[in-house]
Image 1 (cartoon, rainbow, N blue to C red):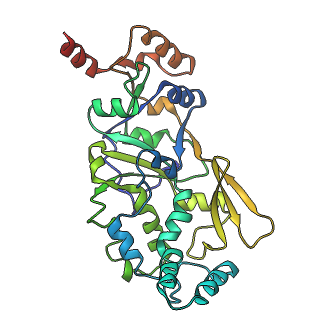
Image 2 (tube, rainbow, N blue to C red; image 1 turned 180 degrees about the vertical axis):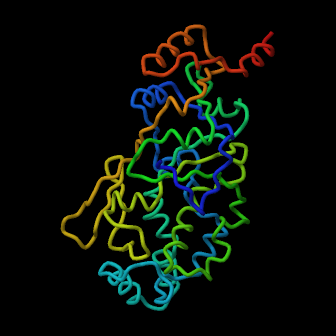
Image 3 (cartoon, rainbow, N blue to C red; image 1 turned 45 degrees about the vertical axis):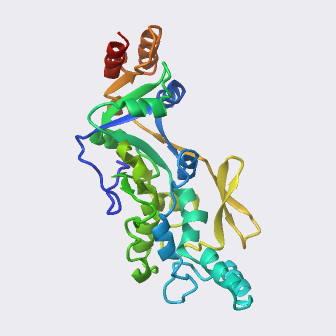
Length: 329
């Protein structure tokens, strides 16, 4: 089973109900291919520019620690690192040098230029009932949007064998102006040569959001960073991963992992969205039609399910539709 418990993720009780709201095109792609889509976290910044980012308070704390400190750095000593260090050391003692140090050698650079480009997650809404707000935001009040109802346990059981481990955890909501992201409260005293400390700090920004989104009660299934490193970087995750000589660059709608001191250039292309095979007959307990549906949608949706070896009898009308109809009358 690809699901793997992690000390960095708080997995909800397996009997808790999950929802996923989507347009019919995404639903068709999902059931036709029998898989779940895991977009890169950077794609979520279209709706929230703070996705994958530190809170302001945590970033301020991070800038107090310089990764050039020989005793406390997760960066492997390599040619690219030394070139960067020499360039900064050659600068005159000035405000400009201080800014270069904070911007180029703080832990934040590992998040913004490396780790978050290797974070992929599939998002769910944790609630006993469907939500009018979620229909409006993720279904755009379309008559052909749908919602999948499942449980945490069924989501876990639905993952087929894969090269990746998958963690599942609740999102924590914070005031990004005044609060730390969990794990960064005592950042300056953390041993960054410990790969497990670094890993926890890498995960923290993707399982935290600003508290204005607290109503989403979000649960995220996240492909493990260790699996990504092994699959795309061809190495086991340790504190010796050379973050400086190896970097992620945006290219042709995806990401490429490159070695800056290797004439070979691109090592491997990483797609914007990773597709994970899933047993949808185990995952899907109910498919709910949009509360804005029209009379033409029911039969085709049930046939779509049947044609893809799923049970069309699992389709039902949204209970919110009854409320909307009462308000109209």
